[in-house]
Length: 238
Image 1 (cartoon, one colour):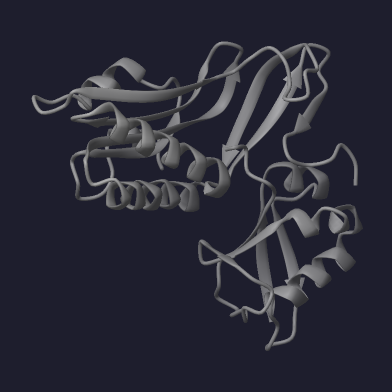
Image 2 (cartoon, one colour; image 1 turned 180 degrees about the vertical axis):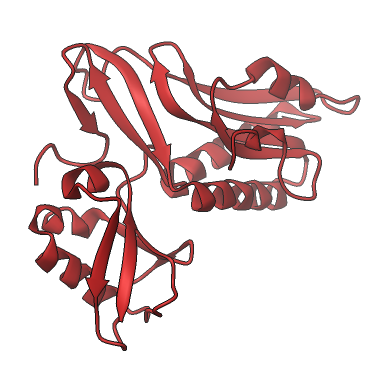
């Protein structure tokens, strides 16, 4: 069978392609796909152990069988971390706001939507672009965020549902992630929860943030003043 495999972030840059065409036997599984990609694209071989494979927007282990019509993607480590107006809400619960935002996050407006007469606490985490890398290297001038958008939007909504179920005292919840080129000082992510008492809001906010950093396929490239760049989570060379 012939599969078209999507790539993102540093993988796409390293391969020079956003879609890899792979020929596989009809009974191929994800493990065989990994080996075939490594053989056909040696520049990716050293990265593949750190890569997640998704099949139809779900992370798949190496034993999962592939279908010719499956949507398959290779995902590098996430930035941790759906359409242009996605911040306007998600799901059937009006108390939950999730989405990917192309452009500035509306922090003030979003937080205002979390208040209510029975809310005594609103706890938020607001990520901001800083002027140095995680390892302390100075000179970062911007971050470039990209995503596997259909999966990222769905995963944000799933995390919100899970957090609401685990923390039933939470009245309202917002999970928003910015995409695109973000200069130093720009906001990257907003996670906020409201509840009658602060303990519930703190716990929900932290749980949601940690899940986003681990599970949502958003990818981050750091750009420095000299024009150099690196994809967070991937080594500088293969």
